[in-house]
Image (cartoon, rainbow, N blue to C red; front, side, top):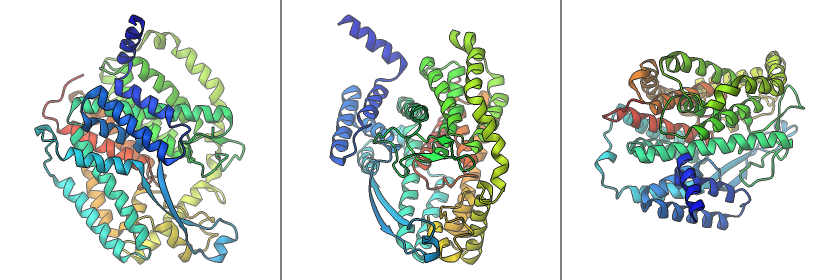
Length: 487
């Protein structure tokens, strides 16, 4: 009995009890494909968290956050009538709609949370809030005018959900206890996704788990090197998982190297596996973006702080780097060396450029917007399939996505919101000594998402969009606290 108590005490020093329950939830969901068993698992997860905290409200919030990143949903699909020229070399396009399990948890939390009458959760509306309201209202206008109104209305609902998550996070993170547990959940998920990427690479393909997307059963291979398998963790798209890891990486570095109340063992294990996983995704844009952000992190933050490294890190860091370089170095060199291939015929850069050109032409034709996530369907009727290489996907740039979807008014409104957000984030990074580690890490997460979204179509992509809006709301909450504790 005493041995069990000692084990529980040691486990409690590594992670919060709620985080250990989250790990059990993830492990239990690995093989669950049916909806009913998954619902039972969610109920047991809520019950377990409630028994730990004796508070239903944070229990439902944590289950919502924990399930948010696993795209467990009921999908509805219908074929889109594409031109014959497109169908000769590509599969018939499909319009997807879905209802996620996390959506039900969000509604449940909203119902419970409205009854919480605590002063610290009161909301004061600011200019950024009115901008987001205007964005949703203008989205209604473009959805009414869209040639595919059902698609635009559905994705406007998703965008509205992201904004609700933003507001909820800006309230929830006012509680230090809720904030720490939520951040731990995000870090646990990130570690799991990184570990899954490593295991997929070792096995040479997906593991057949219920948490993996099955859009491509054999996984994704590099366009310039068909023999290079790119594992994507929970997603078939390695770039998406790489971007999510890149968003969390600066926060991991901060918490691992500077004294705080997060467990160093967990953080350093996460940092090691995350870096290995990031390399294995072979996502060059994220590599380069993460490198630039980490250099800024060092110059603006780490160089001004007293860094603390565990004994094993101090002793074996050189050996570890040499070992990783021997195993991963050749792939990195080969992958970066193939950048020149992207500007050749059917290369990634050419493909992205043509999507930007199409987005700009549609933007000029319909400056009020064509509707949310309608672009990949409308180009089928407007352009020859050879021009966009028979790949009808969203424009690979955040501002191109917003501009073509919501038109000039939507682009201006969203740009004003981002400008306010980035100004606040840069102020935190520039004067890092005056701000908490969490604020700094969240500021870098905001910059990371916006940087990666200049290359990839992440505006409405799940679950990276949910992660961005959640962390952006958390950043606002951290910066709006009256008292900022120095670490």
